[in-house]
Length: 432
RNA sequence: GGAGGGGUUCCCGAGCGGUCAAAGGGAACAGACUGUAAAUCUGUCGGCGAUGCCUUCGGAGGUUCGAAUCCUCCCCCCUCCA
Image (cartoon, rainbow, N blue to C red; front, side):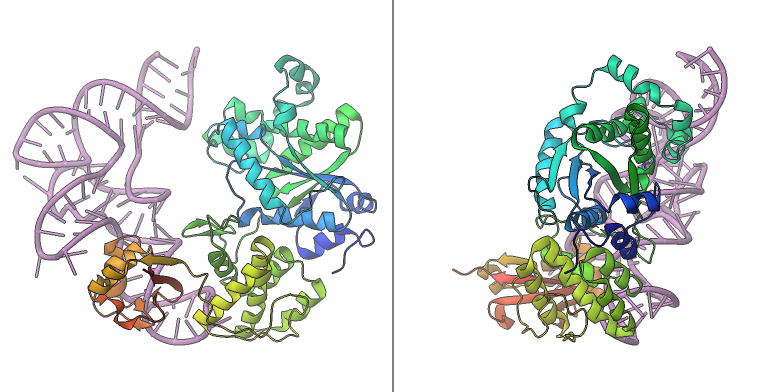
């Protein structure tokens, strides 16, 4: 894989579609010719990252691969205040304990993408310095550099002024600006990156650095990634797609990526894998159903990054046995470590419920089973599903809602349930 | 603190004493068509072994044969005034 201090990350990020807005393309491009220190802030308000956080994480990974030093800043202090940007309502306040707990998990997840080694990347928590701030000195030293008039005209404020903005939230951007200043002073950090909703906060930091330290700092924002159907990336009916396998299993994670819309495939390959641009470009000629080959690689690579090569292989196999084997030409995205010819019949990773053999022997009404296994939200929903012809047991359509599922058709002690075209669940008999 | 306007099922939003499990739209789900894509058409979309029963319209009481709809108190949100 290419990468190294020689080719400029800025070009790489641009070509891969990471750049929305910068404080000056040329200046940043020049800046990045030398190894620098940059940072991105992460909100520890959730106990896991989700797919929507992948852009900044990938951006950091690219920076590191090109020899730059990173700071992943966990907003343990700012999370207690709540960023109003991009919100129409006030954020929920979290307890300090919960925040620090979350911060730990986030570091673990980041380590899959970044090497936290001395001098290459570090994880800092801004509660360390923010909690020590004294109100009056802070106002005198830094508060005077902020114009309320200007803050009020910012996009994020204007939105909130219509519905209401509390004073505590109004302070958020001061604190984030102070973060940048602090990191400039202590870590010589000169570049902050973030989502497009962070533009105002980033610029505020840059200005503070200039006013207080008379120094130049820079900023980059990433585009908000939406799918072709204009949904926010990573939201499904079940909610967010999480990186934590306890919240979103590797199976579902893989399925999420393979269900990518045609129009998004190339963009997502650039953003969410490290495959060389030239190869992605070459795959552009794939049309129609051939695009599925590219989706397979995308799903494999994306799953590999979060869950590891072995898990990715598992899901590939599971996918093959459920949806049919589709061999992917080795010419397509050749750098991917995805095995090209692979056996199937690996159902281990499909969501599974273990069931008592006696219950199965007496037989379980189909609609109860579908509900119990969470393929349907309620028994009523299961009845409707069956009525509409969307429920299958071992690939045979269920005709009546209360037909019994029993152990007569057991296949290796397993039954495969299916709701609709692609939601599977495995029922396994408890061995005695 | 004063005056006015609101809180309806996942979301938006009608309903303003019975015909209301509550219009319409969106989302979602299923079927058909397909490529685990999109678009389209059709159906479903509170719970329940179910032509019925149960629980919902910010919360608690009340009026009435009958309340999402009327009254009282409380909570929350918005607008204007201070």
